Image (cartoon, rainbow, N blue to C red; front, side, top):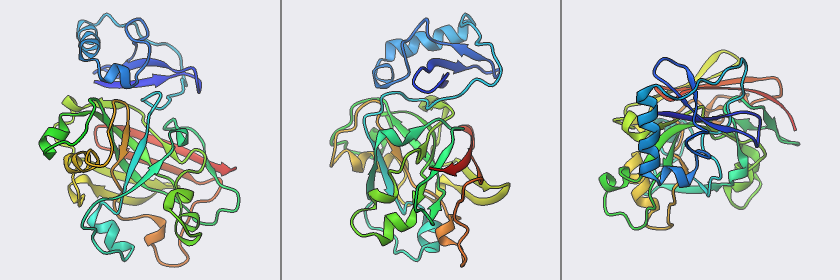
Length: 285
């Protein structure tokens, strides 16, 4: 299933995109798409049955905003340097264990919402990423296979980063990762049963129409199942938590000088096979 949330920011309603590309209203069945729903297999089964029966009403209207596909996210855990080619382009050694950092849930915006270039920024960068959404509470998981059974589904994350804040200002990476609007998410949460192999997904990102990133999740150093298993050794993952699993080569930081960092007015487009597309116009904060 392709689950999403549509409407103005803060007032989104749950929806489903059917096999014909028609937007269907779920508000008569569920209150929202969040951790409570993702943990409730009976409720998800009712949604699947209603979709198969063709009884869900269509949502009419042009230009309806798509919001983040998951509401009330508890935490966003991110993996740095998780693609072989990205580690190579930045001159970093291949990590022996996943490199972790956090993003605050309030960085999340819709997939086509405006992204703000922070005040004083000279090095705002792009990163297309596969995002994993947890569906079952995960703690001390024993294997990657077991971990995949705790995944509700997948979506696209744009892990926007300010490299000067992140790397050159001292302390942790968080300063360059948690600026306002720095985690567009969506458009859909595609349930795990419709993504048979999360390691077989192509990722692409364009800036002003020029292809910058063209990778595949098969190049991940730590695959999805291992990332979820590993995280569960250090923290409890709850339904609705999000994991950004890293980005392939092609970021601005990895380009020759002068590096083409983002500026107000730039347009960034992202796509992951089967998970949809994003498009953001940048403006100054």
